[in-house]
Image (cartoon, rainbow, N blue to C red; front, side, top):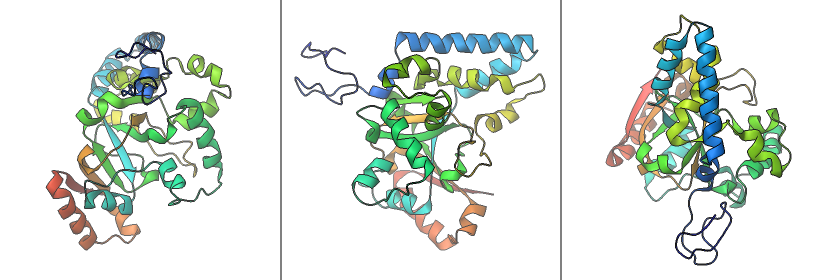
Length: 289
């Protein structure tokens, strides 16, 4: 890409122009916003609409697309991480790579680590440590496998730096058999989008699950569902990739699973303490069954 200040070329995955040092844009958004990628998502959405027509559920498909325009990004985490973020707005949400590189987390050597690291290197080259992961949701609930607390992010603070995949990106790399960096763009065409067109991508992905009896009450279950497989490969969600740091001020509200916190021994006194910590930042805490 070309720097709009010094008019020199530099690679789109770099955080700054290496010639003049001015900030670049967000590489994940650049990748998802290329004309051919935007066109592929449009074509996929149109094809899903035609399929819905044939199956007699076009009204449900159009309603789903409109409903998806109201989606937000939700991060699922455990109590310790949420408490750490709530304690001060100087605490930054750390990525897996931040924690490993700082020595605060040891890789377990499991199959998921072995899949995630090469997948992230292919999908987020030169900037994988900058990406935070979330899931699209409307009701503020997230993927329970990653924690009992669900942080809804403030859309105005993330929409300019967020892109989406039509599923778990690590699983997607495996499913599409992407093992060559030169074929990433080709194989992912129509499978990723910038935040502004997330509804089209998500509707194209989910449309085949609709029928004539589908109603809005069914949509959240289509959008996000925890799968039965222990490694998370069968979880269904639309993945959000957010470039750069997040703090408690990036969070709009926090919901938590009452059954999950009870099971993990997180007591009312701790939840009250968390509620008090969140209040100065205007973040509400809500318990759900």
